[in-house]
Length: 367
Image (cartoon, rainbow, N blue to C red; front, side, top):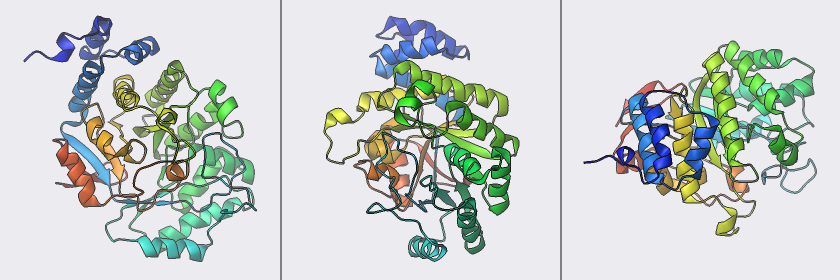
């Protein structure tokens, strides 16, 4: 059988196919050629070949719980439906007792990770964020704590007067073992000036992860695509992550996140297309040659496209979540949680080998 990559519909892909097969790094210009091509099957097959070399037939998932301790936020990001002003209806800041009650209500002994992100709440001190970690670590020592974004780390530095390094040291001392990938959005100042001017800059976000890697933390990286950014900006974002990974080798996974409209009732024109979602996952796999994993985030693209993504370069479908709030407050139409059995079914349905992992991609069980 002739492979699509041997005779692509779009002949402009031939030089890129040759580079990938030779193990050569793709440029931003190569990425633009891929984005501008409509030969999705060839691009997908190329990304799949790269993923198979890195991860074989394995697809990873984790049993985890999302926790958003507060939605009060001083920033006003254009894409966010989650944040609230302190006195606004629906604003909340969990006390220690409320936090423990929430976890106890949703806890299962098989949960291996707490994924903690929230608003940049300037009405509480840095100690509030440390105490959130401490109390969870005290009551649930068996769960890994993946807490806060690079943008939150920069905010904590401003809130406390501590350096980014000292903030991270305090988080580690409290029990944090990894940073989440959020707060990156698009790592160009053109985008950030328009969409998230009050949050960490490109350099500040990258530096937070650079320092975290230097302190021994393995972290995650996201990209929020599908709003005002250009295709070139998406690729610059990937290139900047790739350069930091060259320097530190501290990122475990890249997670492309399709932007969600603020209302669940928003029409199809306000959402990313399936074509764009699959192409972005595949191009991420091809551009980020020094990342082990590309994650298909079912919360954003849905379960069926997540299945498809497993043949387009993705090796991870995230986790059970229990209750996801941030994407859903912005208009996500998907479920807010899946069971372990559902995740296994999704992976097996794509002809792949389900692998339950911990936060650091250590294998717990193969199904």
